[in-house]
Amino acid sequence: MVQQLRAPNFPTDHSRDWSTRRQLPPAKSVDRVIAILEDFHSGKRDHADFWFNMRGKTIYIRYFAVRDTQNNYLGCLEVSQDITEIQQLEGEKRL
Image (tube, rainbow, N blue to C red; front, side, top):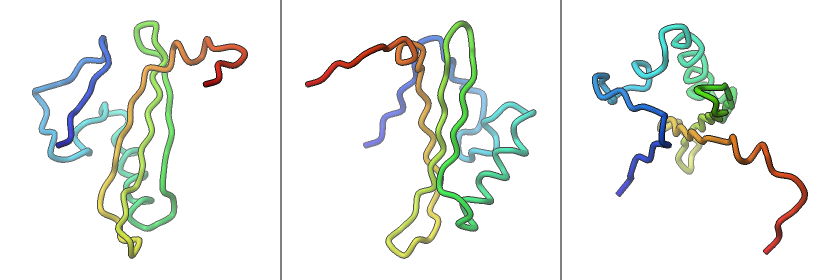
């Protein structure tokens, strides 16, 4: 079972149709998202990374092409993470 996790203060828009990624990004980003998905389909690239500031937090978004064992494109996985605390790290913490 896949569970969708959302960070606090990163609102989910329940009014949108979640069946297609093309309906999710802000209108100004749709063309860029479509270009990324086309690159995934063609095999030109397998991931894309973005980050931005939102309400005092740094949000890191990664898109990954999902492929089968024959390298056929199956879909796109999006991973979103609040990296604000990660950016504050200094030194090392080892196991």
